[in-house]
Length: 142
Ligand code: 5GP
Ligand code: ZN
Image 1 (cartoon, protein in one colour):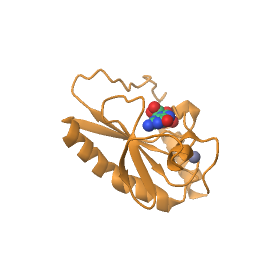
Image 2 (cartoon, helix red, strand yellow; image 1 turned 90 degrees about the vertical axis):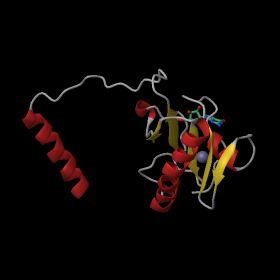
Image 3 (cartoon, rainbow, N blue to C red; image 1 turned 180 degrees about the horizontal axis):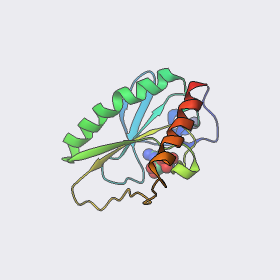
Image 4 (tube, rainbow, N blue to C red; image 1 turned 30 degrees about the horizontal axis):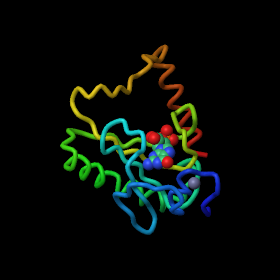
């Protein structure tokens, strides 16, 4: 899909908004996040507009996931971080605020205070867990 006018990441791709690029190739651009969880927090985007990873051409998806660990390792060395997340949010409920597919590479330091926590939800029973797995398998098989 071509770039669109009202998308902030498309604007970055068109050079209309300044960004701090750390990596670029034919298919992806990676730059420092403007509101980082930690210093070195990087966003990787495809050079095409698409809202969700479920609709993105797999070639772009592959190009992004291929560079994500390399970028993570580089950010880790540059920042002396001790670990990193690779995160990709789809939909508002999942925390997606920019409707242009992207991966986050987020460096972590022990005791840095960044919190990703579970809601504590549990399956009612092992059967309920099996039932849900079966439902998902059915949808996947379609
Ligand atoms: P999301 O919440 O959609 O998964 O992540 C979007 C990310 O893009 C956020 O972490 C946000 O800080 C970052 N972001 C939004 N606008 C800009 C921008 O104009 N420049 C940069 N560098 N990052 C941005
Ligand atoms: Zn876009």
